[in-house]
Length: 214
Image 1: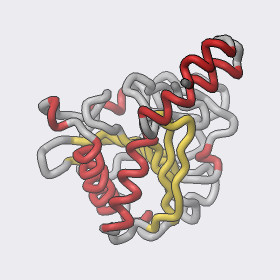
Image 2: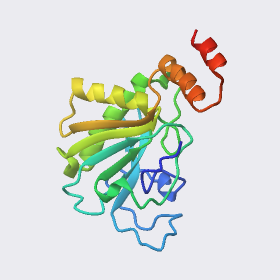
Image 3: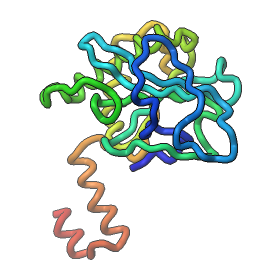
């Protein structure tokens, strides 16, 4: 499920090779061939965590009044859905968009972990640490309205992260809201909804629908 609501999403671009300890403003964007020039500032790099992992991010500032615009963290489903796409209705027309690679080792982040270290709890803990370090790197976003949104398995990432931020607030994070589209939230509930979808869209008969429901 590619993210079609943003103009730029993490992709196979050269900035993925960067590791920086200070903000790194980008110039030309490899693969961008639209006749309209890029009219916003954007930054990318890797933020190091305590366990020596380096988490990739891409910060795309708002086209207008970036200093007053809210900061939106986008968490994509996946893995495997990172791309670059031009969108005339991009959210960064009115908001500063922060894409960060979660969980680790989806594309540009390093280092590879043991399989047992990839779970919702550790993913949340590392996202919290990432946000703390991000604000140290970009202090101008302290206390800006902060939203978290995403799709697909972000239906798990986002509630876990929001719950953590509510219970243990991060200084400078002004949590204003969350939004989830086409979310994966609970296997039993999600699977049950598929039955209704298949029937209402003509994929299964009433007889099959009734049998499954019973």
